[in-house]
Image (cartoon, rainbow, N blue to C red; front, side, top):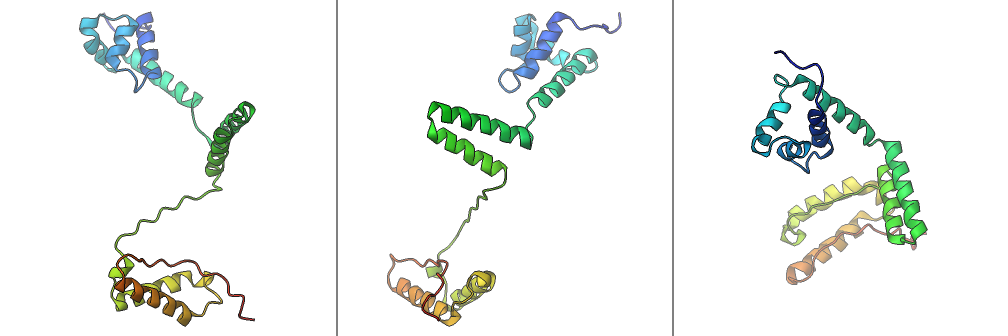
Length: 186
């Protein structure tokens, strides 16, 4: 008997349904929709995806997938252009929020925005004076370029003063903010 040299219409339809509905329909559902018997749909769907039994169908599925992936491929320029179209359509409809969101998404894709998430565990209030001193030293060393012009002893005393207050009051917490440039040192 041998392998067929040509795909049947049902095989073509099955392959197309399988690729275009990936994740939304099972292969069994695609086989039924393509016209295969409901009683054997699961077996048929499995057989049609077997390169030993149906190499032409498997090859055709691969070709369709490749074509589909090229068609919907996301690359930088296409992504930016599409977001621009979405933004413009939103502006034309007066949907300002959607337009802003599309523009922000374009900015993120272009690398104009950087999202940072900092996860903190523990509380500064729970540190001993020595641990707090070590932590402050590492922070000051790490952030020394942005702390230029600040007197480090003043900075340490402010932090320690806040730390001591928070140890006496359970409701207050210690937060280190980026110091403002001093205008009175002239």
